[in-house]
Length: 299
Image 1 (tube, rainbow, N blue to C red):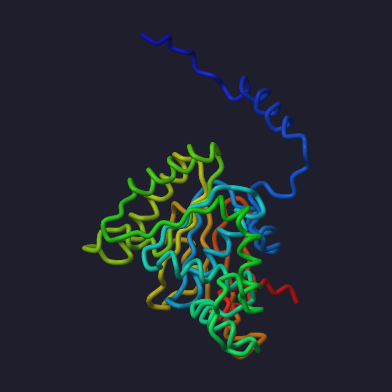
Image 2 (image 1 turned 180 degrees about the horizontal axis):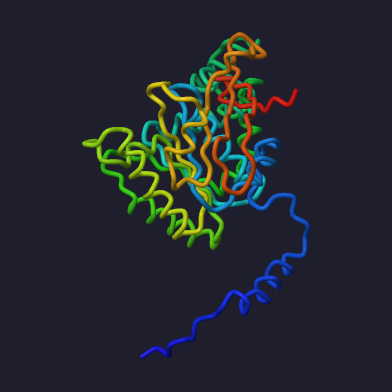
């Protein structure tokens, strides 16, 4: 029988905790992982273990924003990151990433080397040498090669109607063991698919949020989940009270006041309406759907 240990008070553990804080040595600008967005980092104090809920209407850019954050967290922090997609295919997500990194439109990347050869001013002709690339294709290959270092930290999983929280937990354990890393970032896109479809979306929100908060707490990881706002009946701030278990609630809305930089872009406001470890704020972004890219606006 294991020997029972006496209870330990906070006072007895305080010295060891202070020593742990001191052992870090370096000065940290953020408590959590950098997202690659300076203003968002300032508000959130980086991404730390816990549940982050990203709410917004369909087609507003939630998936693109979540994937960009995942990529940037892996890139800036060398942290393993998993993207669970219920409504996207791996190929589509890869094309979006390549478009954002290369500055080539998603539809152009999707058409491949032959189209890029034609579209970027080089005469269209039969390619006999597989190593012969058009300027646009060369650029795409170059950025892809440069991204391999941090893409090695990223894992994308296509989910189906039978995907459960247990499946997600198993994948998390596998990646943690493979990368030998305690720190992890997880994105669950269209997280409402985890809930029982027999319940209303509102009822599923509470159930899914509770499940994902448990996953974040038990595994000590950061979980960012996207959630659809099908009817815009509430002010962004009202979402703060609807999900008690979330550490952070962010509501994405298209700005009614600002104009985007280009006609094809969108002006997006990200309302941080709940933040247990930081401040609340409204952050401004410019979203370019053609390049699947969000750019922080600081003007």
